[in-house]
Amino acid sequence: MTETKQYLANLEKELKLKYPEQTEFLQAVEEFLGTVEPFLVKNPEFVEKNILEMLLIPERIIEFRIPWMNDQGQWKINRGYRVQYNSALGPYKGGMRFHPTVNQSIMKFLAFEQIFKNSLTSLPIGGGKGGSDFDPKGKSDGEIMRFCQSLMQELQKYIGPNEDVPAGDIGVGGREIGYLFGEYKRLNGYHAGVLTGKPLSYWGSLARTEATGYGLVYFVSHLLKDQNDSFEGKKVLVSGSGNVAIYAIEKAQELGATVYGCCDSSGSIIDPEGIDLALLKEIKEVKRERINTYLESHPNAEFYPNQSVWELDFKYDIALPCATQNEIPVELAKKLVTNGVQIVAEGANMPTTLEALEVLKANNIVYCPGKAANAGGVAVSALEMAQNAQRLPWTFEKVDQELNLIMKNIYETCRDTSNEYVGDFDLVAGANIAGFERVAKAMLSQGLV
Ligand SMILES: NC(=O)C1=CN([C@@H]2O[C@H](COP(=O)(O)OP(=O)(O)OC[C@H]3O[C@@H](n4cnc5c(N)ncnc54)[C@H](O)[C@@H]3O)[C@@H](O)[C@H]2O)C=CC1
Ligand SMILES: O=C(O)CCC(=O)C(=O)O
Image (tube, rainbow, N blue to C red):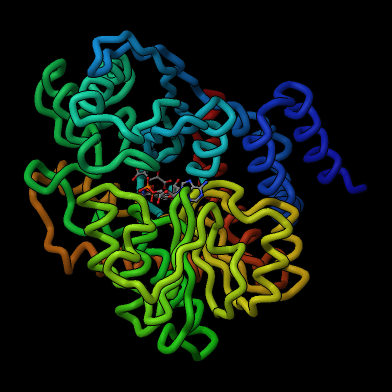
């Protein structure tokens, strides 16, 4: 084993001993450390200065309780988190997730990946993430509002337009950002730039709602262009039916692909005529219903209860996982292979397990890691911060154009970096090395802080 490999193995071993229960965090770290050796060999100063050990430890983790009252007058308590992982490149930036599975491991993996994702955008944003184990499913508007207000009572002590700028993630959209913003304003006055993903009427950015899904499809379209190909005529499946999934479907359809299926946590639908997106938006964005109600208007579609789209027998070209972490374990990766998939591009964060990734690699499936392919959301959040600071709203076309350029740049950076350091087309290595390089240089120049 080379000296650098040994150094990386020791770092990983130490973390495993310290946090044996933090499986998602360890998974994200293992994937990252497994790719950076070629860079460190050419740039030994980062090993000499022990930048990696510093990078692996979050600058700060805030954990707090969130008391709130439900509609029946009962007292409820949830856990809240904000992981302020790395501020070398700018204020901490990353979403807030409301989901019953949220714990410190999930928060740390998301914040860790956010560091490199944000670095890849080339915009001035550090890495952070937060959330709560609160389950928004089945809650009334009043309950959501009271919960958000209570969360912000505590979180407001640690955030600000130049310190830490949260946004949405699973279970947190425009409605929740509105309630969080209102409470922050009541306590601190009007600071437009303290949250992104705001509604348009008070300094939200046009195209932020669409940005992650559109950005994902732009990323893949630049990859396809490199292969003298395009989305035209491609068969696509998407998992999830939330913010990222809906706008990935929209852009893929616009570029000439047919998206046949998507899902939520109750099951999947396949529509042989292609997904009716207007109906899906009505079900998910307006009525907040389960996905099987799609069949009431499209009886030719099929509903598969409790099955993810990746479990279905269906021939298609491009898989866009846009639901949640580890939704593609090894057995479903094998299914993707037998279904004839050529490209897997991650709208979700870490939807593919490490073992599944090996299966995809062994079968020459092109794999676009989330930290590169889904960076469009946070990139437009940074553009929202720029608009807020300028006190000038940009047009949809301007933001969308910038987003496409940023995604092109990220794709090309990952491609070229992997060529330079690995001598191969490996977008995982390319994303990790390029993302790390910018952060590591900033950390080195800022000294021991
Ligand atoms: N919203 C954003 O701007 C960004 C989100 N992401 C990631 O994209 C993914 C989706 O996030 P959003 O669309 O924002 O959330 P969302 O709350 O709008 O939608 C999540 C969707 O995934 C489905 N889902 C969740 N768990 C599932 C499961 N176990 N099985 C099947 N379906 C499941 C839900 O039913 C829902 O349709 C997450 O991994 C998130 O971290 C990444 C970058 C930015
Ligand atoms: O827009 C943001 O700051 C959050 C985006 C996010 O949470 C993500 O990229 O996973």
